[in-house]
Every structure is written in C-alpha cells, then in structure tokens.
Image 1 (cartoon, rainbow, N blue to C red):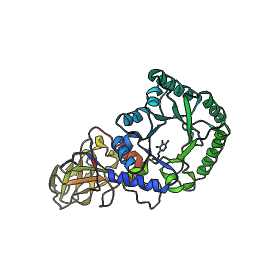
Image 2 (image 1 turned 30 degrees about the vertical axis):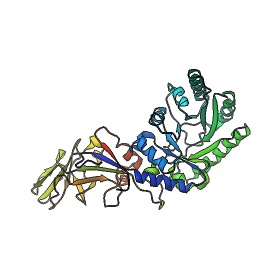
Image 3 (image 1 turned 135 degrees about the horizontal axis):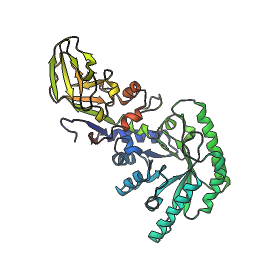
Image 4 (image 1 turned 180 degrees about the horizontal axis):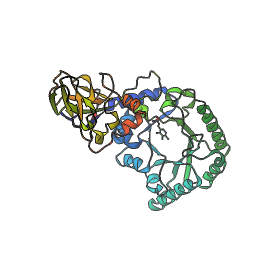
Length: 379
Ligand SMILES: *Cc1c(COP(=O)(O)O)cnc(C)c1O
C-alpha cells in the first residue's frame, strides 16, 4: 500500500520491471538475460526487483559485491547469481558455497577464489567448485585483465582445477551509449581475440559483454548472456523508441498552503520574490531526501495534477511550490519525478538539468527517510 499522505516516498511499479525485462529479453532472443540489481537495484530494492525480473524472464542476476549476492541467495533467490567486484579481504568461501558465480581479473584474484573453494570444500566435506567468469579488459581500463596478461591468466585457470571452473569470459563497454562510437568495435575485436586465446587453451566459455545500451543497439554483441541494468528500471540510455517504462515515482504531499502578498520573498537567502499575490504550498522533502539543492529555482513538480514551479531555495527538509491563484487542498499529491506520462518531470529531466545521468538520480533515492512501496499490477 502506498501511504495516504506520504512525506517522502518512492513507489516502484514492479509490473514495469517485468515488462522491461521481457522487452529486453525479446531484444536478445539468442541470449540469456542477467538483470543487474547492484546498488540495491539501482535504488529500487534489489530483492523485489530480482523477483520481478525473474518473472519477466531473467535467468541470471548480477550484483557488484558478494554481500549483495549472498543477501539475495539467503532471501531465497534460486537464479544464477554473478558478482564482480570486491575488496582484497573479501572471503569467497561463503559465496562459492552458496553457488554464486564470481569474476576474476588477475592471478591474485584467481588464487583467492581457489582458496575460497578449498575452504568451502573442507568445511562441507563436498567438492565445491567455484564458477569463474574471467574478465578481459577490452578498453574500459577499469577492472579486468589487460590483454598483455591474458595469455598467462588463461592457463593458470587449468592449474587451479578442480577448485575452479571457467564458465565464461566477459568484458564491459566504455561507450555503448554513444551509437557508432569507434571504441565499441575496438573492444569487440579485443574480446574476440581473448576468446580465441581461451579456446586455444581448451576452454569452452560463454561470453557476455552487453549492457543495456548494447542490448538495444548491438545485436552482434549479445553472445550467450546480456547484462542490462538501467533499462530494466525503464530508463533508456540510448535514443531508441523502445517501450521502456520507468518504474520509480518519487512523491510527497502538501502539508500547508498560504497566501502571500506581492513583494514577499521565499526561503533561505530570499532568492525568489513574489511579483503578485500568490498561494504557496509547502512540501516536506528537501536535499536530505534526495532533492538536489542545486535544482533550486529550476525545477517543477506535479502538484494536484498540475505542473508548477518550485520557488526559492530547496531546504534540507522542505521546499515551496508556487500555486498562483489555485488553492490545492492540504494532502494534495506532489510528484517530484515519475514516468512522465501525466506531465510530471522524469529522472532524466533532473539529470539533464544537473549535468548527470538518470542512473545517479534513481540510485540516490535509497535513503532512510524515504519510504519505499511497491505496486504489483499496473495500478
Ligand atoms: C552496471 C553494470 C552493468 C549494467 O549497465 P547498464 O548501463 O546499467 O545497463 C552491466 N555490467 C557491469 C559490469 C556493470 O557494472
């Protein structure tokens, strides 16, 4: 249930997640779909998104950290789980024991994963085998094994048998959201070369490299598995006409209205002054709830069904909306951003104004003061 008068609430439409995952899976018919749910499901709630994504056709879930993957497994998620980035003190034993696929970019990581499998085996008395996805750095220069070291890493995996098994080689694209960017083909070529080396060493790995942008624009890069993240939340990183539906709506309520005469100024610093008598509505969300203070004076909200400007500074806990001669009732709904289908702003609109990407907007909505609720059917 959504609150009757939410203070700061994000409402997640799980039917949108199911729809988006099904759409993405249909775009990559020859591949399996891994729904990326890192960062608490891009701020939408990893577990709830994971369940909806599986209903939508995902057979894998991707997380950044082992802790995120273990939390999903322990909450009853049975799908394949893949996790790719941890700190050097990470213990791979529990992850391997709980059937989580892990990424390896270096000899050092390979040794630590093998050690985790050994300890998990000793502990359980079973032959626990770590399923490894070897990461080749094809040009993002983040994690991944540089091509120069790949010919040494690949054979080292044979030496680590039977504690580990290489099930995939994978990589990540730097500029997939810029259609036709020359780096995409460069990365694809290096990926092919890495695959050839793995095959020559006797491996028969799956391949995966496609993020959301590549799922939607580069069918040649779908391979065996695709890893969409942002698009499953309904935000499209590329200008295609795909029917992706934003899953997150950020809401609040009017708690007070008042009439002020022309010439009165509003909020800290008096950065806005009423040019005529007007009605103000007070909304109890501010920068502590994820409304960037730098949007002061340049954002709108949908308040009582109408798009209206936020005036004066956004404060820590409050903002003020100019309603002109309207008198919205106390408790009126305020939509800060949402699907955009009723005239409300979208996360993309915020991102464009802030000079960032909508990924950053939705992931920053995971805050203790924001209440999160889930819509099931398309209600
Ligand atoms: C975040 C991430 C993805 C998903 O990227 P989107 O652009 O959100 O689709 C895929 N793979 C890796 C390794 C990632 O870190």
